[in-house]
Amino acid sequence: MNLFVGSTNPVKTNAVIVAASETWPDCTVLGFETKSGVSDQPVSDEETRTGAQNRARAALEHGLKAANVSTEEAQNEQSPIHLGVGLEGGVVELADGMYSTVWVCVVDAQGIMTEANGARFKVPEKIANHIREGKEMGPIVAKLAGVEDVRSKQGMIGIITNGFVDRTEEYTGITKMALGLWYGREVAELL
Image 1: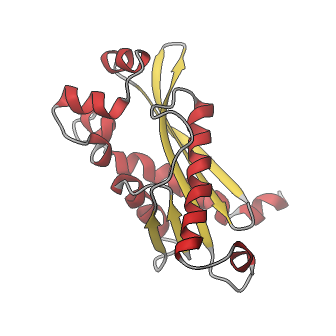
Image 2 (image 1 turned 60 degrees about the vertical axis):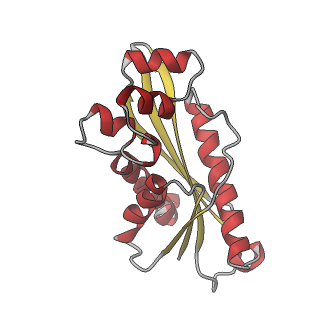
Image 3 (image 1 turned 135 degrees about the vertical axis):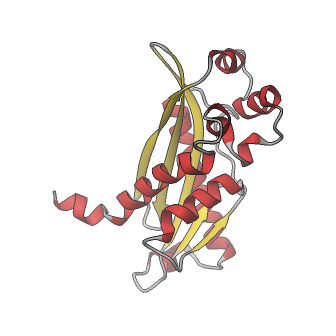
């Protein structure tokens, strides 16, 4: 089992490792720099979801290339399983303010795609106002909190919960859900 992540951010790769480890303790997880194909700060569910899909497809492509495995070989039932995993964080405006959102997409060599969404929590208004002005969440939070590279560490959730929840934990549950939907896809088709 090979899981190719559409990012080298340790938060995202660690979320995949933790999410997969119980079911696939011997899986290999490799992160690749990929483009989301959306803005640096996605500002809707659709844009955030598209970013996750794009990262998953690109991760699978990069991973197969790195493993020297063609798509046709990867589609063979005797081949090890290769999955691309894309994780994308963004924001969405709801009636009572701006909320954080996370989309995770999993795609296999056959093109079967599963997705999960969650981690919704209200963005503090001071941060939301900066995002509405076109700024990106990570650098804003880092500057306001005085913490370098918050995206690769605890994330905004770690800052505003005073360490009660960190960004890896935030992403792990959604990643596990997306992987689980792929894992149970044949059962779901029978229902």
